[in-house]
Length: 229
Image (tube, rainbow, N blue to C red):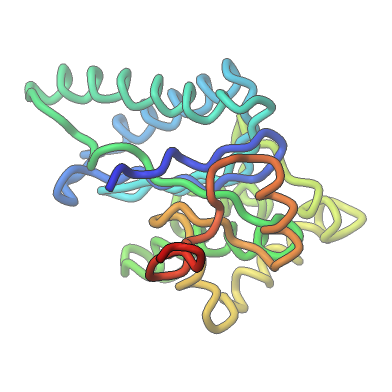
C-alpha cells in the first residue's frame, strides 16, 4: 500500500520528528548541535515557518512548527536534511545516509495540546536519563521559556503569552507546568500521532481540519468499506 503524503496545512501547529538511520547518532558534539540548530533556524526563517519549540537528542530531534504556506515545512525540512548530511559527512569523513527515511509529522490542536507538546519535548532528555531536569539540558527550548537564557529564532506561541502578564510570571508558570509533567496518556498520544501522521485533537478540530485537506487526517476503519460487496 502506498504511504500517505504528510499532513501539512498552513496556520496549524506541526509536530515534527526526524530520526537517525538505525538509531545512529546524528550529532557527535556541541559543534554538530550548533550546526544543526543553525540550519533549522535559518531555513525556518527562509521558508516562513515559526519555530515554537525544539529538542535535539543524540539520535533524533523534535520540532513544533507553524508554517505560513503548505510548502513551508516540507521545503524547510528538505533543506535542513540535505545540508546537514553534507556538513556531517564532510566533517566526520563518512559517506552514506544519516536519516531514517523521511521525517515524521502531524498537526496538533494548539488549544488542547501545544503546551503539552512543549513539555513533552522539554522532558525528552529527562526520560532518556541524560539529565536530572530540563533546566540542565542546553539543547532544547526549555531554558528560553523558563527565563534561563535567550535563544534566537524562537517564536513563542500565543498560548505561551497567555501564561502570565509579565515575563517573570510566564516563565514561572511555564517552569511549573513542565515540572508537573504530562497528564496520563498524553505522552503516548503525542508520540503515536507524530509517528503515524494522524492529527491530534478533539472531534471538532479533526472534522474542521479534514475540510481543509483531501488527505485523511485519521486512520480509516479496518475492513472493507461499508458499500463494498
